[in-house]
Length: 392
Image (cartoon, rainbow, N blue to C red; front, side, top):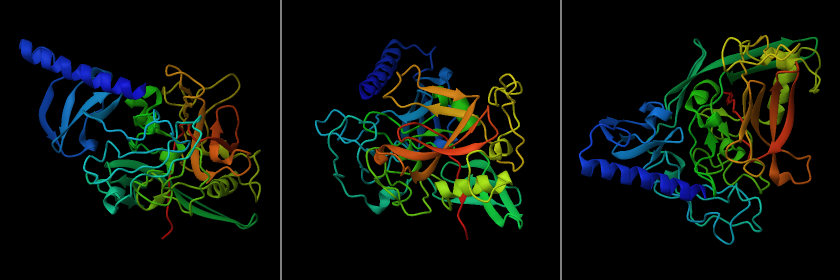
């Protein structure tokens, strides 16, 4: 149904453009292609509701503004879609809409097919050229003086924080560089039933600007193998323990933290215990001080709950909320918990539940508690991502 909607949407845009041209109507620019040529997707303006239907050109390829994203005028989907009789129960990825010149399609099993009875292997070999986007520079620049990370894939700049704690009494010695903002890289690999596997909250680009994107676990782990083979093929319906560190969708030289790295962070900043316990004080020290009274993107105060934190280590966690699985909510009510909860994926699958192939580990900070804890969630839920710098 989603694919039919995309096809119908682009057909309507094209027919409208032809009709306006035939009538000589120059008063509307909603479907008019701009003469300006852009060098990369990162140079495009935000796709706002006012720009719906606008067509812009990037290196000779046309992109249309739809659903808060700049998407190819003729999107391509994996031929092994959810409509096939033997669709998969794990992540299925085809070539990204941000990789128009990729020489081969990248296929693994589908993430959005919970009722599929069988697992289907890849039908095409991945070439080395499919591992990197030909239109993006797969590199990053870290500035330790100004505490910034520049992701050269799309030129976005993120604040970073060096958390260094030496506590001889507790015998805790911790030193890591974390992103101090949520990742906002547009990983647009489609799945069997979705046109993308990363999202803006409420499909509104303004939320991406402040919160970063919400990623399926398959996108977090880079199951399509766009940037790294380590997490290739991992996703819903498949048990897959990649080798640490796992780059995933993070910028080059950075990685998606595993659950042990997250627990080490909580122990270090908590200042009390030497091993991870859920009843800690790490949450209030990692949450941003921004409140909802100061900004619509801050922490909501409820009654005697302050909501926001002290941000002792410039981690600046904000309540970006979640994108719920299609299996449990309809298309008009899939996003919630912004203002109240920050949830982040780790690179670790959950090993405690009976259906291990369905769940991965996340970490959570809430408005109504000072603690920060790890937990697990189904892999087709959308959460935020914070990346950690690789050790030299």
